[in-house]
Length: 298
Ligand SMILES: C[S@@+](CC[C@H](N)C(=O)[O-])C[C@H]1O[C@@H](n2cnc3c(N)ncnc32)[C@H](O)[C@@H]1O
Picture 1: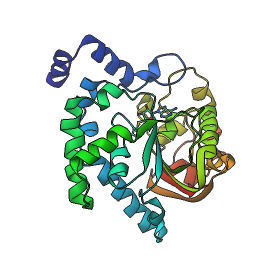
Picture 2: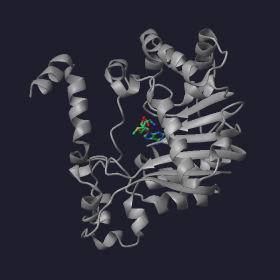
Picture 3: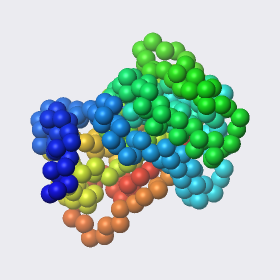
Picture 4: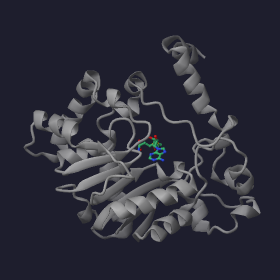
């Protein structure tokens, strides 16, 4: 209770309203989900967004997990050097972009509807996020790039991608916890467009979180006890698109990509669950998969 009062006291009425609507978004009618709030004050207060270690640790951990499961050096295709990298839904501070540029990416493109440039290029974010991130990158990966050069790359080599106009060869496409938020039809169109913008051999890695994202406070077996057509057609703001692993695979493959690996990182372990028949079309593997890495190329 004290914590709630402190939060209410320290925030503007708009921020409080946004926080409440986000928490209970599934109760509000309308299509599509409420966009994330990446305004400066919100980002500054978010420990995850401001943590200089999160993206390096995530990148390294994912490759360790992938290697343990696949027993092959699939990471060799994911060096950033000389590449044009696109990250879908990179979050408020260019996601893996600064790291990619530090490690020699040619350019970084992003598709992030909620990103606010004033936030990214504010002095305080430079001091409190990009600068500590530089020293972390240097400690982790070494290299001779200077702080000024790194700032310059962030300023001059990060671009919002225009899917209608840009006709660049993109060499690497990344996303983390994004594809599950994009409605199926939109996702299919997006993947087709992205495919047409890629160089031949371009590599992708999409990490998809199939968990319920707090929908009706259910876990996965709770979600599967409901009729998925009724949920999808209920006109409520769903935090996720309800697609499962095999649906994402189909979308990637039908866009033209080669899907080389679907690596299941995390599973839900349920046994005697009472599933609604609308989920019967899915395999056990599909239903249990919680976090999956989709890895492949054009
Ligand atoms: C759960 S957040 C993940 C952010 C970041 N990738 C991370 O892992 O911290 C999902 C992100 O996807 C973005 N997003 C939502 N719809 C999108 C779309 N159609 N295209 C690209 N990004 C989208 C949201 O704005 C949000 O930043």
